[in-house]
Length: 315
Ligand SMILES: Nc1ncnc2c1ncn2[C@@H]1O[C@H](COP(=O)(O)OP(=O)(O)OP(=O)(O)O)[C@@H](O)[C@H]1O
Ligand SMILES: [Mg+2]
Image 1 (cartoon, rainbow, N blue to C red):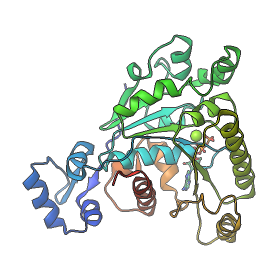
Image 2: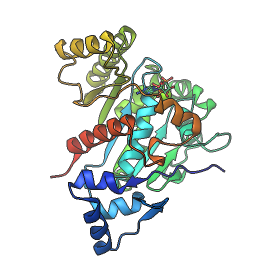
Image 3: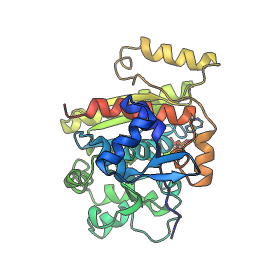
């Protein structure tokens, strides 16, 4: 068993998002008979279910793979927190951990020894939908474990069609979820190719250093190779993570991304500031949104999720 994370949406956040006062939030919730919770004397919040009723946001069900060949750029931290934040806008999320390091699984406080993972689904022909576990209100997870290190080999020795092997499992679940977020391992093996081919969008996080930029180039080349081999265009967006306003390197990275024809149109408007809150949250097995205090990290993730919702929203 594990302690479920408990993401919270403060009345302040609701008020800011809708553009009304805290008092108006109260009366709106009362009027709509939406249940809310209290933390301490004066802090009220909603959970995913309440947020779903309140906002009623409709987006095109979308599969997003967080992919970059370089390690440590924030694939796990950003996929985890985007899922959590999106759940607080009322979106239903499925998170798929494909990395044998299982950091996404650990982010949810799960130390996985025996729960089925992608390699078990493939070896034993199990259905994804029957093997996801609920990890928070509005969030399900297909966990990972060390054995997934053999996933590349299993896909290759069994000659499995990389354009179908995950997609056939994931696509029908678009009826159950608004967002399906895949956390990829830091390589360009068969697993990552199959993840890319089952995705509607690839989000490539990079950090401000030259290895990230080289990793980005490699990843973009690989995606364009996959696109032409399989005749499928997979849109890519880049998110700059660990931005530090005080360093030249951060500003240089940003300007080199903007001045490069291959990357300038792919860069998301928002970027994520370097913050100790990310490692701290991971260490404590909670999300940034388990507390309702304001922080730059929460604000950055919020803006990123809002940008994604804007791109995916059904008018
Ligand atoms: N914006 C940030 N500010 C500060 N630290 C961050 C930020 N984003 C992520 N981190 C930290 O950087 C480290 C690497 O992040 P993360 O595990 O998300 O990267 P990753 O791309 O998933 O790595 P891997 O490729 O090994 O799976 C972690 O310790 C994480 O807490
Ligand atoms: Mg990771």
